[in-house]
Amino acid sequence: MMARERLRIAVQKSGRLSESCFDLLERCGLRFRRSRDGLFCYGEGEPVDLLLVRDDDIPGLIGQGVCDLGIVGRNVLEEYAAGVGATALRSLRDLGFGRCRLAIAIPREADYGGPGSLAGLRIATSYPNLLRDWLRRQSVAAAVVTLAGSVEIAPRLGTADAICDLVQSGATLLANQLREVDCVLDSEAALVGPVSLPVDERGDAIEWLLRRVDGVTRVRGSRLLLLQAARDCVDAIIAALPGAPSPTVLQMDGRPGEVMVQALCADELGWRQLEAIQRAGARELFVLPVERALA
Ligand code: ATP
Ligand code: ZN
Image (tube, rainbow, N blue to C red; front, side, top):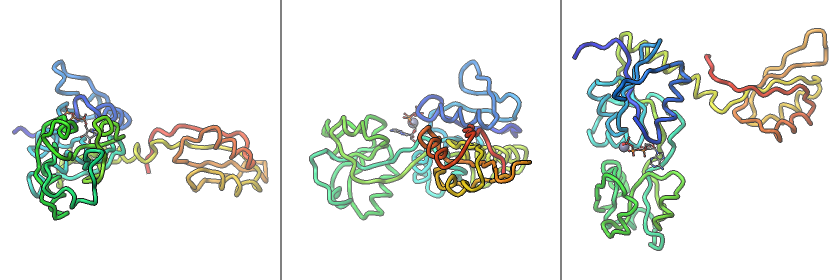
């Protein structure tokens, strides 16, 4: 294979992760032009291209060296890892979106007294490796029925007694008269790469990309609050700030007794919170969005 100089990242072509992936990469300063066939996105400016594929193919593509990195749910990464045994892949960063859990669910009216209740049952899943590992850890012998999709209808069709499937809100389970009883894996999207990173231009690109990802995820949802106040009020104001940030208190030129306070809050800072801070003595409050951070 010809050595590539440009970094190639595999992302889900269309699905639950796609929008958040593109949003993250855009916030990391990457711009793309889509190829005609929709398989590639060519980076404009930075030497980073995307390969648009089904999420299930992402770990394999990195494993084969077709891509350097990928963005995929930990559920897919761990299922792949459990399937191939020891793996050369790892999660480089958790990304904070695509949160869900791989859960065990049983018919609403069935009893459950812990994993032992699953002994001898047929459990339908698209994650046979993770389910088998979990059953082994629980010392439970059950039959794993592997299905490619529509796992949630298996109990109603009589092809399984329980399921092991991804759950987010639980609405799908409810609609299928199932109830969640145990958790096999907590998952979220992750930036995945090889255990040993390349030591060349691509390795350099991975390093700056990780720094930018950190800069974006660190401040996601945060606001910068600026305000003025009499120095006497500062303690009360700090106590009113949500999430206990440690603010910077600045002396104001030519106005002794007056300060300016600047605080990075991991919170939206809605009107009610702002009004409470104002009641504590703050004036001239400004709430600013924070786009990125560099330590
Ligand atoms: P593809 O066509 O790429 O194979 P898919 O149908 O396997 O798509 P999606 O349903 O788009 O995948 O889900 C992608 C990922 O989103 C999942 O692997 C999981 O990590 C995450 N996810 C978050 N919430 C849910 C949910 N309620 N159901 C399924 N996946 C979820
Ligand atoms: Zn998939």
